[in-house]
Length: 245
Image (cartoon, rainbow, N blue to C red; front, side):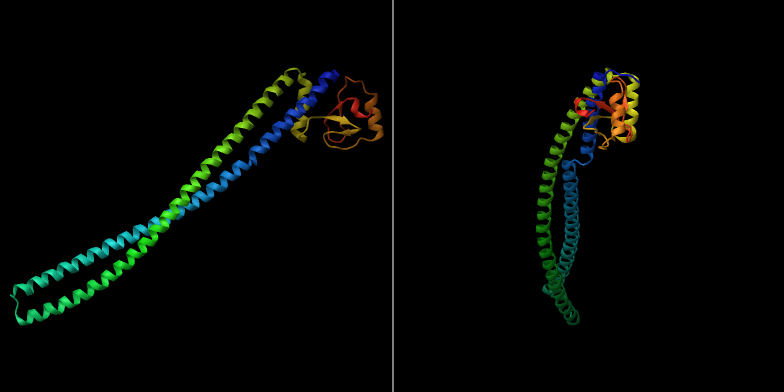
């Protein structure tokens, strides 16, 4: 097909815009700010899991403490009852011996339970410190994550601005371009990634292959308004003074 050289030159601008759009799309997939967010989300989740695990331990210890306190209270009540019976002086010799024996057993039982309670309470104190530490780490990680998300959102906003600008510029270029030429360009770009390129120093700007002398001679003889394509990659070649013809 025949297209005036100034219109052909517009293909270079269109190719540059499309290359920038490709770079923008790629940057979205490898955005360092998004990778930082993903890393911090993983760290935040790990700290949250740690905090939950420590909370479960605390809940178990609190349950053990309540159980031991209940058992100690029951033993104390039994002791008080037995002491009350002894103080009342209403028991016979056999009952007196049995009550005294039971009081000794109750006192030993209470001592064991109180030792167990003290041990569990010490464990809870240590676990509470672990929970505070885990909570502090979780809070810091959430703050770091929030800051990283803001940086990520700012980077995405910059890409959105750049893409909008490119989309606007592309629409302006496409509006001035013949439909048939645009179809050739779009098909080539869909297949090979680059629709048009500058022929510079006898080299295709798309595939970077240097054309042989015979091909250069043929192109040199071709009218300026005739579309020329690279024999290697098929890209539309735009000829200028830099082409080496």
